[in-house]
Amino acid sequence: MKIATWNVNSLKVRLPQVIDWLRTNQPDMLCLQETKLTDENFPAAEIAAVGYQSVFTGQKTYNGVAILSKQQGNEVITGIPGFADEQKRVIAATYGDVRVISVYVPNGDNVESEKYGYKLRWLPALTGWLQQELKDYKKLAILGDFNIAPEDRDVYDPQLWQGKVLCSQPERTAFSELLKLGLEDSFRLFEQAEKSYTWWDYRMMAFRLNRGLRIDHILLSHELAGACVTCAIDKAVRKLERPSDHAPVMVELSP
DNA sequence: ATGGTAGAGGATCTA
Image (cartoon, rainbow, N blue to C red):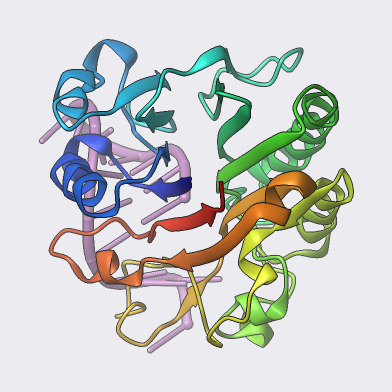
């Protein structure tokens, strides 16, 4: 089984790339973030034409998450239960006995911002809900744009980014609280190339200079981590014309 | 150096 995640930064713009990517990579599930589409505008028919079902929750202009899958998704939940949030950032569904969650964690803007406070309230709400989900589902994968670089090796210039949003200690602590629930950062289960990132700013030739951060993650429950055989970033997609600023990440799980 | 680019929507906001 292959499960992937991709912050597409507008599914409307990126739909041809997503369809190509599904055809080429044939994941069983693909989690999307920043679809930026209301539900009535979701291109479910175009996606169905290449053999994928969709579950989604979106809004105009900002946010929006989805899961595309070959098999039917059940027990669909949108948002964090018990956490009032206008912003569409979470969707969960069950495929066979595997629970899959697509998340778009708030960016936070900068550490002085109100948005940073929202991010630091949002993360414990996610953690609290996941604690219950992990009790209910032994095989759980949470994938998405976490907007957190967990360690300095996930940042092209740790000195420059020290204490800044995406790298600040409170964010990293919140991320480690997620792992403490019984989740593993699948990327670090394997030896990886140095300077591996998933997001590069559109500005200042950041991608060409590999000035990136690893902020998109696939976290696996211990049972799924034990079955995980690869985790890879598809950096090639970032080189396409009109790319998303994020690259997809995919894990392969042995049967 | 507070810049720069992309997306949505139609002036700024978000990232």
